[in-house]
Image (cartoon, rainbow, N blue to C red; front, side, top):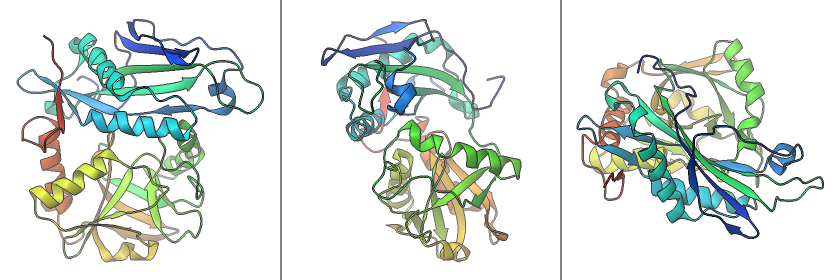
Length: 333
């Protein structure tokens, strides 16, 4: 790709299906990238929407593969249930992903330089409402965009004084409203020279949760992979995958547990993980002027983080066999 940034680039086709009169209508491919909505559409008034993110990659041999799309289908169903939306059936979700990829095959970049075809399935409430209530009509869409790496350098984080989500709220749901909460904070963080905000639990402000757009993980000084556990963290497919890669491919001990903010100095390495971020090393975390820097005792290239990233990337790009079901190859026959 000539421009390796992570940005929206319109592709020729997107998939559209509508829910009306209590059922999903047949979906179809369209060249129209615009959506026409009533001014009082539920998504505009009350933010009733959910979305997913996954990547298709063109391998060195020219095959097009997708990493664990079944997990995205399941997570979107769970998000819909929490947001009082009719789930798009998982088998139709997977079929729609394949149709979108096949229709846009000519613009899917080679994965050799870290590029991929980012797929954004999403659903919105479309009929007009005025009183606070769920919509009765919905639109499910998938569009794709050729993208480069999300982060192109070591990441600088700061502890944010604002909250991303509330206890018993929607932090575990991939809904736009959670990300809207982070927009003011990320604008401020960028202005101050940070790449992302790190959020704490809003109940006690004691435990580390995640950043505005990715899960976080740590490597202890004895080489253990530790990821925060919380009911208000989005269940990341990438995080689940890196735990499997670490334990089953590299023999690294793993632990999922609540992680206190005062434990940060005890860790040797830190990274962010997610569909967009993949695995991205964190250089430092600024806790109100107390800056902890990682990778002091080892270079990034020789780190546990880099070892895990290498194996996971090789699986995602089809260069190494992964666990059963992780790689879905798009059929063109």
